[in-house]
Image (tube, rainbow, N blue to C red; front, top):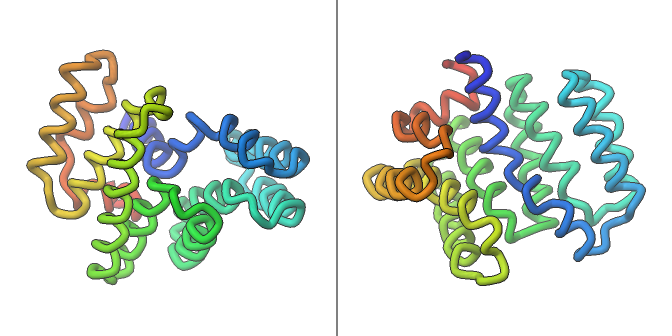
Length: 201
């Protein structure tokens, strides 16, 4: 059960972009073969065939140098391998390609925290909060408002505003009682989130 929850948390920290990724890919006109290659790589990741997945992610990147998602997906593999330098490199590449990737800013901040670069981490958390605020107030992004509010709450905890983050989580729980994952998040401190990255739990 703990392993399953850990996987859920890791996925929520890294890949919530999947909720809107298909629409974004079409809108931003990424190379269709690169998208197909990325999606096949994700399937391999789900089967824990990470070496093969990395090969396909790299092929997707070769096909479309503007496509941020293969970089973002590679982060998950490197985090699972505790290779935080490579994970951070891929995070930064994804942010260069997609500066409004709010989840990526939060995760990059976590990686800087893990490396002991706390001041830089705070800058990245703040950027993620600013981006989540923008998304939450955007009427065109109403379909993703739950995930954006959940992620903003996590970023608030990470930046040190735990009270505000927990209040947002409690509000979400009252509005969406079926979101069971919120129960876990309500128990967690910043240290607990970072422990998911370093696999200390």
